[in-house]
Image (tube, rainbow, N blue to C red; front, side):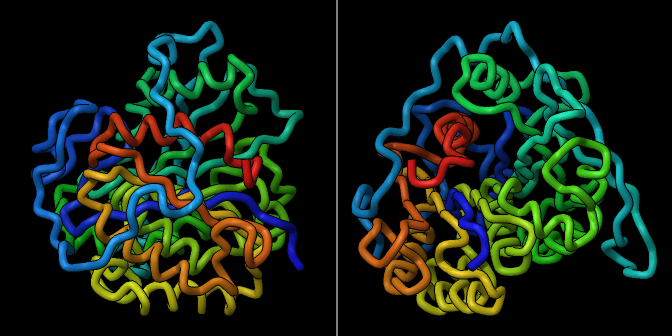
Length: 359
């Protein structure tokens, strides 16, 4: 069997989820109408109310989704930096043409080219941009300061965090239909172009950036995203298990069967995920999934339906240890809604666990 992998942070979304994980995203009208407060409530209708959902806490979850200490929003004495990585990829309108793109990367304080770093690729939601999570080069967003303080306080090892976009640069079309098309194609851009660009420039566990080198280092690479970024994460799980062992979809379901398929066709959606796992050649011991959302998040109905269907496939998805080593958890924060405050809170709790499965 292949090396045991660690962590997928799985959570679901609705068709209106055009939010992102940073504090600078302008997002879509539906998501941006929500106040940026932890007390905010989702205003969008939950379009899958007829779907049976899993009660919060009924599946093994994080023991506690703690609030972020106020001090973690302050500048650390050991600040990392936000840098820019440029790359080329196929044009979205003409596959025979290329387009110039870039991503931002969080580089931890004291970065040392002689050591190797784990990498998290973190994707914004619909209506977001490459600057959603970190702002831009040299800037200090809330997420950056949280990472700085987690590392400085010894709560997690220094790592690289890459924040790309599934849109073309200068995108002006934030429609759900466009985003749905782009996220389905993003896994190819990710593995063919973005990862080689990043990991040829920065020191990671990849000895080479060809498929062999990236596959050999998959245990040190994670992919996650919020909302449409979570939809992307499920596609990456289905198509790129060779390159990743850790997946972190936050508040977004799998759309491989249909838009919002995790809610409307949960059994079929779970079956597609299981089939992708079987086709990949990897087994249930080769990944670990964390699923998370809020009980008042507009993503919750779709998320809980898909998770329930995945529970009914115990040969592949192990909730707890009854059927073998645990490889998936589902956490629901009581009162949590679909906004950036909660995404940062989820990441604050998750980041120290990424390369420590089962803790």
